[in-house]
Amino acid sequence: MRSLKISPFESASMLFSLILAVSVFTFASPCEEVIGSDGASSWMTCHWMAQAVFGLALAMTAINFMSMCFISRRIKIGLSVAVLPVALAAMAMPTLLIGVCHHADARCVMITQPVVLVFSVLIMVLSLLNALMQFRHVQARQK
Image 1 (cartoon, helix red, strand yellow):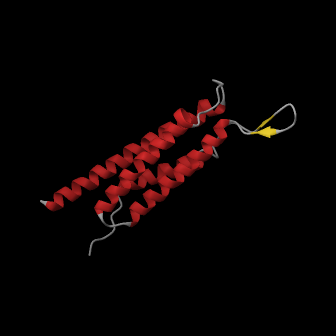
Image 2: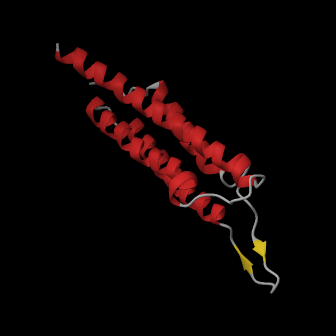
Image 3: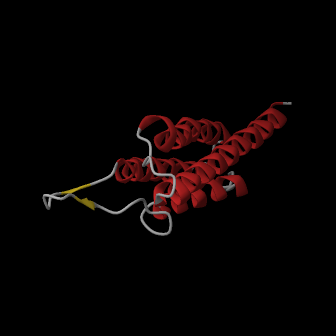
């Protein structure tokens, strides 16, 4: 019977996706709620970007957790590859899809956007490395 083997890339990818989920509400939170001259409050676009990134980061965390629960290396490859488009979508939230504030000195431009981009790239690289490592093991067993 084979034992459950968790790759360091797998666990690091899960850790970084969990940090990304927590960061958009803690140390890399976006701009605060804006209160207009009429007293009505509204959220800036960066708030909604952070909400979307949070959901995507939770999805990446769940996929990475599922990958850690399986023994089959082929399933691990598939789940690692599944993280890639989700991380790409997280990268697109502050840049292409929703965006951040238009002020150069806004908190979301200086802190939130770089944190989302850096963690998304790290998660993509780690997931790709995990898929390649798992694929090498599958190829070695077939020989």
